[in-house]
Length: 137
Image (cartoon, rainbow, N blue to C red; front, side):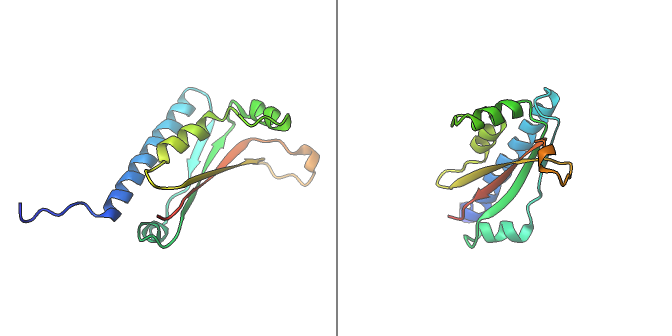
């Protein structure tokens, strides 16, 4: 057909990313529904950052906060004992859902206390903050 145009790289990237984000949102809803996390919040993507990523000008970065993950105690205990395999199932599932072929994905996790307290002895982990970086191709 003479009017046919193959999909552009940018529309493929955006479509694949949106599919991954939709799957992550669905996963997080299931985790909340099943009681594995209390709440989940994903930061919104800024249109300018998304455009730069699609244009291969910069990495795309956003965060996902998992509140009161049921495996938090086990995660912290195993890390303190020096184990490398940590039962953060949500992190691994999110990584699989967001991974795109030929794209480097980095996920870093930070343990957060959502209640401010100036006494470090009262620090209590209540949230896992996942920092997601999709590198530009």
